[in-house]
Picture 1 (cartoon, rainbow, N blue to C red):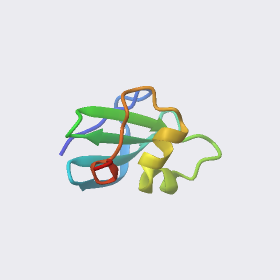
Picture 2: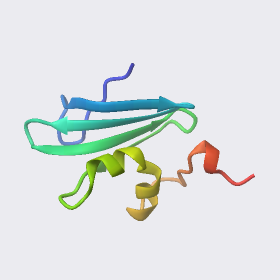
Picture 3: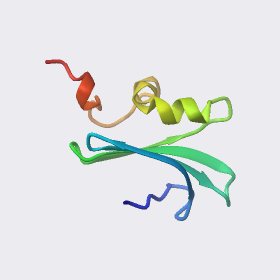
Length: 88
């Protein structure tokens, strides 16, 4: 089990975690900064993405549907499509 850091806090509290098919999604809370973020770690691509939860965001929605939010936020990395949504 990995322990994740945030760009704004090296020791956040883990609120929720789910793992499926080589993809790990973690909801983290920074006690020092009073901010939350969702981290998506994809073993198949080696990509690790942090999605900062903004004031108007629903944290649970971001945690449950992080892939939908990646595209909406203009994820700057290579195309990040979850394995089950890739075109055949």
